[in-house]
Amino acid sequence: MRVLQAGERVWLVVADAGTRIHFVIEYGPAVHQRTHETLMMYRVDHFTIKRDERWPLGFYDELQQAIDACALSLGMPNFLTPVTAPDGAVISAEEQKARWQAGRDPRTGGPRQDMLTAPHGAR
Figure (cartoon, rainbow, N blue to C red):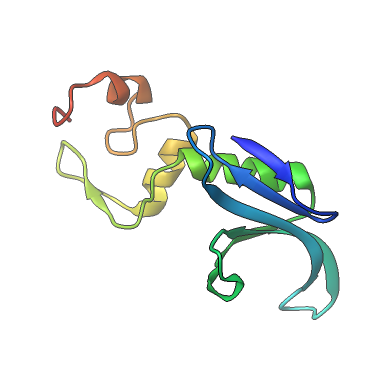
């Protein structure tokens, strides 16, 4: 992953495998929903050409936190639905994400290395 500074307060996040822009990080004002105070934060958006079609990944206090969130998102599969484990247990999308972040296989909870070395379709 590479981070390119595109302006004084704008960074673009590009994956190593290509030249496609995945995220844009902008430093600017953000309004806190509960207190209505204005804070200066790093906003990370999924990149599209049309600005009004972008959707946020999150808001962060520091640039490094924003970059780390992009790196985590680029390496993490989309966990949108529950899956069934080999023993028949249902694993929620939140549990799958937590297992992935801990370095484990999201379906079995075992080491992720086993998942990467298993033949395709042999899970």
